[in-house]
Amino acid sequence: MQPLDEDGGDDADIVFRDLIMLTLSGFVTIAVLLLPHIGESRAKTASESAALPGNVMIEARWPDNLDTDVDLWVQAPGDVPVGYSNKGGAVFNLLRDDLGEIADATRMNYEVSYARGLPAGEYTVNLHLYRNSTHAGRVPVTVVASVKRSPQESSRQILASTVELTREGQELTVFRFRLDGSGDLVAGSVSTLQRPLREWQPS
Picture 1 (cartoon, rainbow, N blue to C red):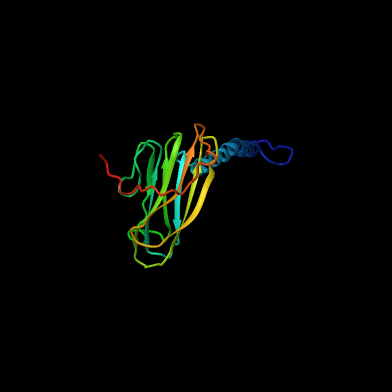
Picture 2 (picture 1 turned 90 degrees about the horizontal axis):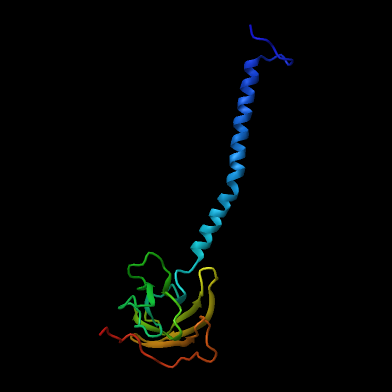
């Protein structure tokens, strides 16, 4: 017969209760120690997903209800034009070529190009109305240029403009601008002087 403790329990009950309490305390301690690391991991994932994959981003957006193929063309200083028929250069890459409703999983009409690095000099951004199946008289397109100088820095918008394309085959220079050696927009450098990019052919 096992001896009873003061509360009427035996030694086996005391050992069992102590073991349960120690196990529970261990789980609580581990959970408390892991909480800061879980929060840090989530914050890091969110910041990484929000980070731009390049230093210059050019976005073009037009109404989702239009079955219209608008092509974004960009050219960095000393590089070749980049667009649907030449998706990559030394600096820019076209990441999304939107064909309107053709082979599109979403209704979003959107194209984007990213640049690796921030070479100083003139950048050109053009739009080309490749196809207008809805026969819209005017296709408004908003173009935004953003710059990110380092991985630690947030991107900042430097230019935005909305233009209208009116006929198939039309190519329009939305803006030309210059960046200095630090990636800053050069004052007075922005213009809309027409400069065709689409007809460029590799030599």
